[in-house]
Image (cartoon, rainbow, N blue to C red; front, side, top):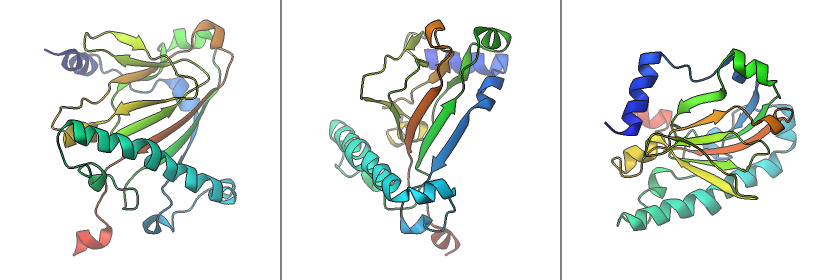
Length: 212
């Protein structure tokens, strides 16, 4: 049995909760793509006031980070270069979103009273997940040996996780990353955790094509 299978079995056996109570105190806002199919989606007035800055940034994350990765992995798998891009195209309707997150600081006693993590072990439903460097350490991934390992942030860098959709598209060749958000280390307990995450997902049929 592989480490991921053992993890899943243990998760079911213990009814492991994905989110502990402290995570419910976090704040997050998720922003859709700036495409015509989603032009009627309502946003907060603050977001609307700054949309001219947010929308180009949203698109650049796909064009300059996700898209080159899709092409590179397609080449590595000896597939047509547009194999993944055609299924995760930015200008087509999909559930891509940019998430802003704010986790308030909590004392060590708070984590000791619940679980020692903010978000339990899980995989993302996305094709690719892009995580910007955060000011508070917390991200851990499950290695092939079944050990939780801290992911060291790269200054100014982006951490990439493969999601369930990408594992599906590659028939399991690319494994979905099992990861979690651990409680902060002692010298970072008093800091707010700020996060910026982009989720790239497969295209979905439009309501019109479904009904037709």
